[in-house]
Image (tube, rainbow, N blue to C red; front, top):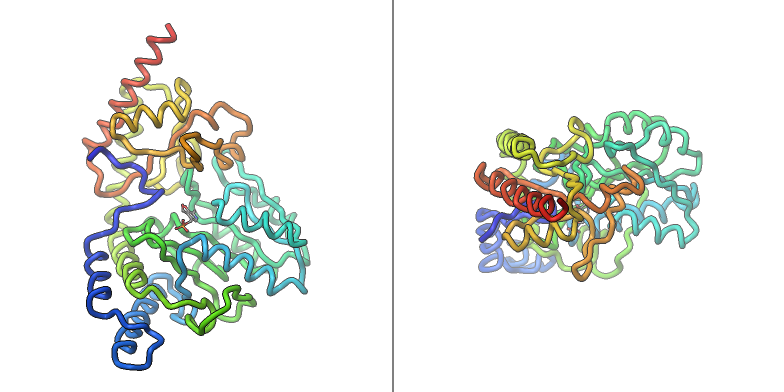
Length: 381
Ligand SMILES: Cc1ncc(COP(=O)(O)O)c(C=O)c1O
């Protein structure tokens, strides 16, 4: 089976989630827009899921739109707010370390006449808040900043960001994908106008997500078609997947505190074991403002592709955190933003863990990295 330590990429679907989804596929398969009993039955599950997700986020049910995942949620929020507020201004702000489903949307908007400011981050991956203050202009209509970075785990100072934005009219969108199940995500506390999430990062199925949009937000919905999701997202709702999302979210919320204790211990064990075995490494990002499930490490003795390949051969499944195409790793834009043209960009991997991993798993990962280190050390001596 090997050891899977790539939970920031995706998580296995929880058995309770599969069970809840199977019930929909087998019995409650009606189209929630149909007015007959079978349709009304499916609608009941859809409504209940919306209430569950809203409750987990401390939102109103009518502020939740189900989507095909965070990529769609991010696209909808960013383009939708930018286009709806075009008359007020065409300046937008984001950061250099966002996920591509945010960055590439902003790059597209640049081709549509918008001006985008990409904020720098420091070596810990924290956004430069002075720059945010300075860059806000009367024509800025949207600021999009992620909660937890998916490559290095840095948690942004969202309450400071909120303070800065309080006196500005710009809408605040947050990609909270990596925060669900790891940090409290309360839209009232965060003071966000829009927030994206995707189910498969917290034990739900792939291909389903949600977008929170605060009531009163000026946003233009981009998909034409039927009147589903109160005319905000045309297309028959994927009820089974939505029920899966809601079930997973409820579980992730309920188990969060307990899971975090276990995850923190496993992380500590990983770092201590690497030190004990005298493997040269450095920690990328912040040791304090971080979500423990994402651990990005710099191993100066081996490049990322070789390390990932050798670990894969030993059935240890981790990642570089950045995009891979046809076996080659594109240098991480996140590490580049944090460290510039440093060796770290090409010699770092992301180990992302969850509460079901064992101490033995962690020790096996460390032992395999040590073997690789000793091999390279011998070859170079
Ligand atoms: C921070 C972040 N945002 C957005 C996404 C996109 O999620 P999905 O591929 O489920 O649409 C991911 C997934 O890797 C992510 O980590």
